[in-house]
Amino acid sequence: MSKTISLTRYLVEKQRVDGHIPAHLRLLIEVVARACKRISLAINKGAVGGVLGSAGSENVQGEVQKKLDIIANEVLIEANEWGGHLAAMASEEMESIHVVPNRYPQGEYLLLFDPLDGSSNIEVNVSIGTIFSVLHMPEESRSVQENDFLQSGSRQVAAGYCIYGPQTTLVLTVGDGVASFTLDREQGSFVLTQDNLRIPEDTHEFAINMSNMRHWDAPVRRYIDECLQGKDGPRGKDFNMRWIASMVADVHRIMTRGGIFMYPWDQREPDKPGKLRLMYEANPMAWLIEQAGGAATNGRQRILDVQPQKLHERVSVILGSKNEVERVTRYHQQAGQTQG
Ligand SMILES: O=P(O)(O)OC[C@H]1O[C@](O)(COP(=O)(O)O)[C@@H](O)[C@@H]1O
Ligand SMILES: [Mg+2]
Ligand SMILES: [Mg+2]
Image 1 (cartoon, protein in one colour):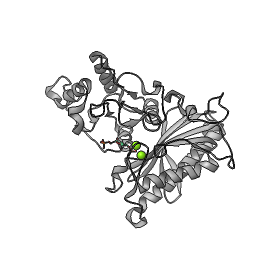
Image 2 (cartoon, rainbow, N blue to C red):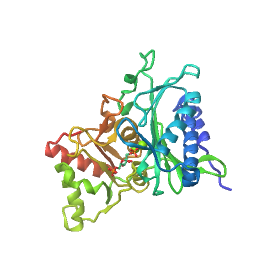
Image 3 (spheres, rainbow, N blue to C red):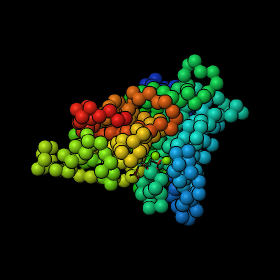
Image 4 (spheres, rainbow, N blue to C red):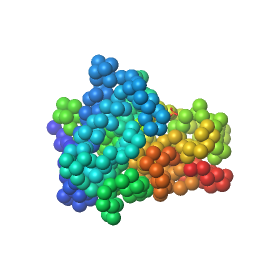
């Protein structure tokens, strides 16, 4: 029988042997992973469990909430409140931060999450996921406030996502590479399935919602136009396109075989920097991608260097295989376009 390494053992080794993470961070990650297991079970029940469909409410961003958006949010809050070594949490589904009540143990970390990403795919049985990011409380902060969360992505201490697809897979970084763990339902635990994930620097696969083409900025049009010209164009090779409309699923494909993902600023809502949220979608994904050898920018600067001004801030996202992301970023610089 092959020797398997559970997420717990992997994290214990990161703590004890490699000295990469403190004990409280290890326990926090384990609590998030346990919550993801529960979310995975709820999703699997589908129509049988009565969990599909709209909840009949909207979140702070004006998006219709699905029942599973709310269930996933509640599972994450409940699990982390009493066991997460946290000071507070923030979520796509909550307008303001959730401070851990003082009847529970207080901790030094801040947890941000998109409880269910790609929720438009729930009913069609296509992969969806949970994205999370962990920050340290600023040293000087006494009682936690929203401002404490407004740290750039480069200050994350852990980040990851869990994809609920044909397999449930947790992909994690604590700043020394990326590892993935697949849920073994018989054992009830996440098992290490790949260590030190690497994204190829070159690719011939792009992911973008092409229906927005007429709204894009010139550098994005230029890049996609050149890809579409294939062998006959300046790139001299054919490109393939994929768009799942679940960032988690599109990023997971890139983690697995390379590619570039873009949700750029566009002219539909020119005052918004982008569609995706900086703090609990773009930052954790950008860090994972960089840790796997890829790159992530908003066309103008590294996503991890963007200083957030508000909790639900949006950002233009270009991430994936390094050479392609650098090319799109260069096109933005050459065009003098600085949407971000
Ligand atoms: O429907 P569009 O405009 O193609 O947008 C798809 C994008 O929106 C998102 O679904 C946003 O995530 P939520 O489902 O968490 O709101 C991304 O996962 C995905 O990349
Ligand atoms: Mg999302
Ligand atoms: Mg979501």
